[in-house]
Amino acid sequence: DAGITQSPRHKVTETGTPVTLRCHQTENHRYMYWYRQDPGHGLRLIHYSYGVKDTDKGEVSDGYSVSRSKTEDFLLTLESATSSQTSVYFCAIGGRGDNEQYFGPGTRLTVT
Amino acid sequence: QKEVEQDPGPLSVPEGAIVSLNCTYSNSAFQYFMWYRQYSRKGPELLMYTYSSGNKEDGRFTAQVDKSSKYISLFIRDSQPSDSATYLCAMISSGTYKYIFGTGTRLKVLA
Image (cartoon, rainbow over all chains, first blue to last red; front, top):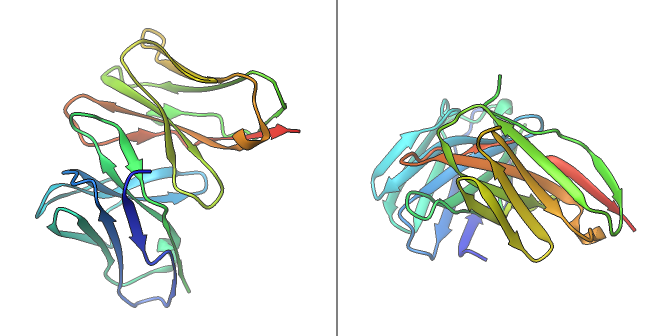
């Protein structure tokens, strides 16, 4: 398995609170991604990073921000959680060069 | 129209059957094609990765890409109950960061 961990694995939070999800990799890979997975929509890209401090938006970035201060860590923040952000969030590494992308175990987030 | 179309299933087959899973796509720039297996409440696991057209075989799994028809397939031979999962196709163009995923096909292999 690719060395990707996500924390927390499960979280329940209230509407309006900020939430930060962490992705940690031990593969020293340059490219990291955050996706959300919802029934009927599949995997949708939220943000991605192509290096330390280099990030860009994906197709569903509204309400989310990211930061990458170290190669191994990619943080996803929900600035003010809403019920529509209830989802399973996956971190992934890979791309550009090898093009093989590997996923973490996911974080199940419920916003009440 | 979505860039990648995948039948959601569920697809139910008896143990030992040959399974065919498919995706169609519209963007002719896609060059790299992947199949992932995802068990319930787990992350997607990369199964097969192919570049451009042709076949690739790995054990019981064969990935096939037909760029002229914009059609990719994953074949599973001698299917097992442990193959029961959701299978996602994914693809990407050269020089981009954005992977495009199908919505997944749920497969059930009945013992």
